Image (cartoon, rainbow, N blue to C red):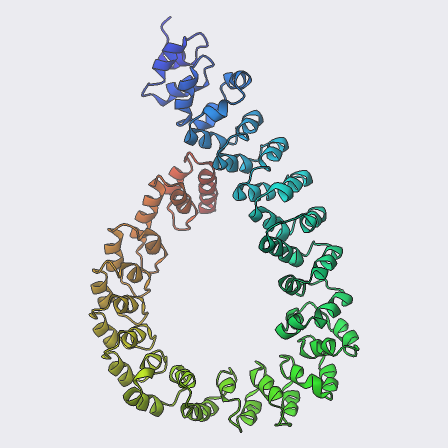
Length: 567
């Protein structure tokens, strides 16, 4: 009886040479039958595996091939093997054999597969590839034994990851703390991660504290579970005292601070005085001690009345400086501090300083002989306009800083836009207050950096961006400017290298967005196709194609997106 090609391809008696011939059939259903036929030659199987990776493992001869040649996966071409290892049907024996592969990328794919046996993971854990080690550590089924191997043999990045990972068991954290690390920098980094990890036992923290490393102590100071004895040890450390480390730990409770308020060591009491969780009553009581006032003055929880009380003694400059720097200091207290000039620079930077107070202080600072102070005034948004106008004419060394001032009058910006110095014109081009007319003139500047700054400025009108886009050196900046009109974006769409920026642009039309997503979906680069599958604007018809992708992750993401579309 005459058999059809499909029947011959599935017939178990069909000779290998005929199956080789049938593998070249134009009919996909015939080729599918060939790949599952146990008589199909191995090289033909591997050729078809690229096309049908999802049914490759249905061929019963595979287990026999693996028995005859346990290293069979090592002989499979790279991309074919990667594709096969991404299939959910991949059997454990195939994954275990692939775990011996010398290529770390292959091992990473094996480590990602949910069916990979623990024994194979243990083998791969000895590999020095950092990405592989972290991937193994992140698995839900990872055992303590595997983590121990990673802690002892893993790359430095893996050990650092384990030291900070919130799921790392205490026994592994203890091992990391004890493990000898010849590189001092790496040892310090591991200990810092351990110090911050909430799972690290306090016994280990005590040992790390005894080593005396400053950065490790800083990390310990951030922990939420610090007992009083460790808090005291940290408070007594001069370097941590200067850096105000403990006061930044908001997990230290008011109850603990109350217990430490009368501690015999001054530095401990000073830590309590500067801590934001210290009750107001304790701060008021501590203010009676001159050695604590500077620290209370810096406390952001100190009440306005208490801060006002602290500046009564105008002779204590450290207290005045601390109050002036305190973000909670109200305007009326800042005004009192500004009665003298000693702290003008600090008050001028305070968010609670009123415009009237700033005008007064900035006038005084403008008379300062120090160039650094006048530069500060030149850039300050509340700088007196009369001062700026005078400096533009008489102080050319300040023009670059004046041009950065976001509150400049238009006439000053127009004047500075004609300055001979490219730095000054560049500052004008970047200034968010520069008017459209000035930006249009600067778009014809001979300096490319100035043209790019104009292309970046959100005040630049669409017709100027339409001109700038013709200069390839400005295209990237035009593509990111929210003012860029749709027709300019369409022009960029005909060029290469702007697809990602155009998809993110608010003015990209729906039609263009779908065209771009279609291009991503057809890309040979897997990350492009995955991006298209994840994008919320990808049309259903494109998602349907992506749901048939050879990459398992892309198929999965596309199917999830399709479910959302249907709901």
